[in-house]
Length: 214
Ligand code: SAH
Image 1: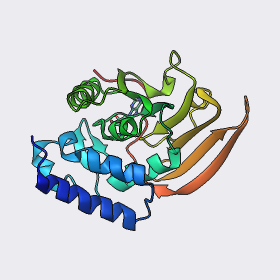
Image 2: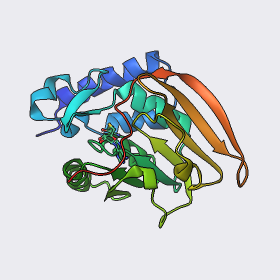
Image 3: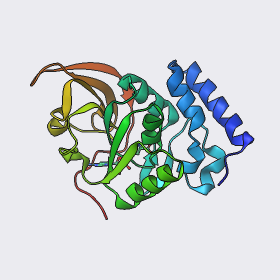
Image 4: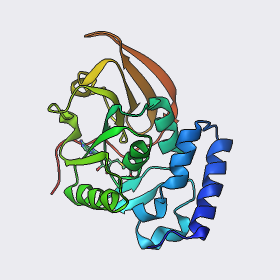
């Protein structure tokens, strides 16, 4: 697949759309301009890749809607060099956006096929600051913890304790929480066992499932 002027034009329209919907962080908008979303989708979706919609990526999973990716990224308030954990690599698109913002990204996926595919794609795009792990996100990544920021891109029925404990003090986790429909929360670890929650409206995610699939 190529990245043509036509794709860039479609990306520009998507970025305008995101701005109208309230995404104001220029670094995030630039990252959306720089990362070709059509590479993260099957060829069949090339024409639709720059619509603000989720699409299937196999294994009954989806690449999140661009607005959702931008909204979660904005809530994370990423600074260059921060150590970030993403749960739910999927296509690798969200991880790529975090990588372009200069974070040191660790991303976990429970479907081995998706994990390997995302890893290959990000490598081919020259994104070197994203590490892909195949495993169960419920465990987090204890060997690489603690993290400045944690992002869940799947909907959790309950607050995952283990992940909360892998945050640095002062660190933040963005997590869609709830069954069926999820409410977006930002959790800040303010002390060893103290957490504060902020709430940001409703979204719909694929579920955070236990275990892994080869
Ligand atoms: N961030 C992705 C969105 C993918 S959808 C993107 O940009 O494309 C959410 C992903 O979370 C799915 O691929 C799903 O398989 C994965 N997932 C669900 N439960 C998980 C778990 N326990 N550990 C790791 N990944 C999980």
